Image (cartoon, rainbow, N blue to C red; front, side, top):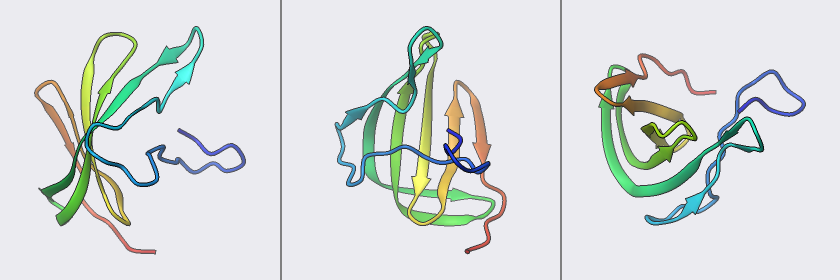
Length: 96
């Protein structure tokens, strides 16, 4: 999601996510609707950029019926996406 007043992408997640929480990261009538659920808040994820602990795992159900998982690391953002058999992995990260 792009910021309203900025060209930088943002992330929409519950402020204090818990497993089982449900929300809609994308909900634009006649364009796209997505149903999201927090699967876990304690994942450890290793990608080329490093190993991240206490990651939040989200299951996204898109309006086209596809299912995607995203894993978010605290202070970093999305470090891994899984869609079917395809995985997108964070390759590098520089703290700001």
